[in-house]
Image (tube, rainbow, N blue to C red):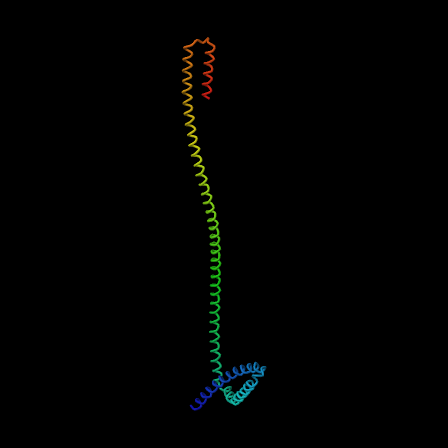
Length: 228
């Protein structure tokens, strides 16, 4: 029982030593890195010397624990601990692979989403271009419509002016037709009067009188001039 407790205590010390050793190597590497950085700057030489001093102290501490390290190499529990660490490492590697696979899947999803957004952006740009074309065509059509309205107004004004002129000409023509009809009526009355006068002269006077014949002929000639 005492031996078991001693072994258990040694195992605990061994685990602590391994952790201390791991931390030491990590810190020692960092110290060396800092030492290399600080060594080139004269202002940090004192700090570099202090780091070297502490490094030496840590080395002495490690060497003082060498007997414990030899005991760890003898113990079978170290092998079990190594197996447990290997199993944990394998588990962590599996977890890491799972996370990497998930990251790859997420990356594929991100790429797919990016492509979808690019496609939507292209469609949106196409729609914007179409709207700009429609707006430009609408502006041109509006300008043409305005020009056509102005032309229509001008043509309507010209048409109204032509109608007014045609109405005036029609009124003047009707007036002239009325005057002509009146003149024709007067001429018709004169022609009828002359024909009646000629008939009266032909029945009442002899045809052998040359002077009267000349006078009748002159009367007819005057009637013809009036008819014209």
